[in-house]
Image (cartoon, rainbow, N blue to C red; front, side, top):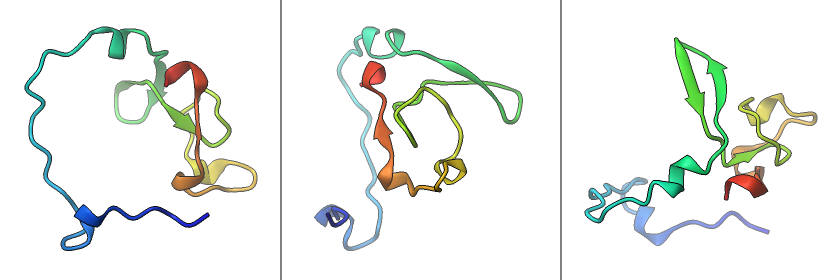
Length: 79
């Protein structure tokens, strides 16, 4: 399977997003599982994908064998 390329990115390689104007449903972030990740201070992440579909924040390149980000697996409880 080839990597999908969005037509909107063809000209510049990026797109500028506008602010979302509608109210946000708190369940979109309150229902996620957050994990501590010590990088620069106290940081909490709610990963939605990982190398093997488990809740962890390690880089995909640390998997055995290493994986590219596009080969990540959605974490069922997070999506």
